[in-house]
Length: 196
Image (cartoon, rainbow, N blue to C red; front, top):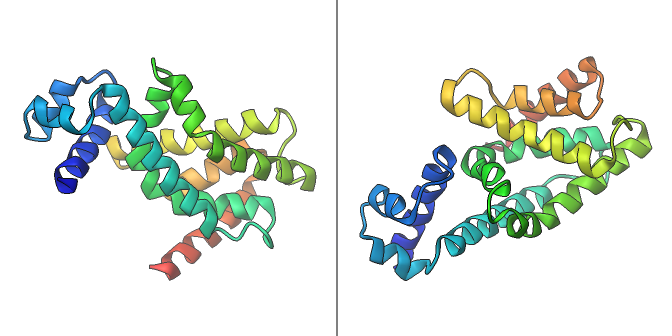
């Protein structure tokens, strides 16, 4: 039962990432099950999307808990966060598209805890002088975070950009000077490779 449900979620995540308007029949076909099976686990498309969003929030929150937010400067924390969230960015980039759709308000609400943590981190970086103050912390954080998902999308399609590009681009978006962004990206890559 759980195996089928998880397969449906995995297939839905990938399919909706490519075609955000895909229906339950498309998801059933891609998962090699009948529509009734999909509806047995998720009575409506909105239930399936909510479950995907809840799963993403749980995984992203776990990544945020792993990053040393207390002792490092905000720009170093951001670099570590992006390096660790990179595999999830591939999986959950669909949420960016769905966030603009009919369930956008619900997805915004589910992602609210992540948004609050990142906004606080950006605000701290602004207070430290590490991040620009040209936009409010909430907006600046969401733009920088969206850049990571955009790069993940391009990477998936073309394979030309990687996590290093995502760290640097998001830091530049936050207003970090290029030399510091490169230094932090290099450091984050070393830390991530030592974790493997």
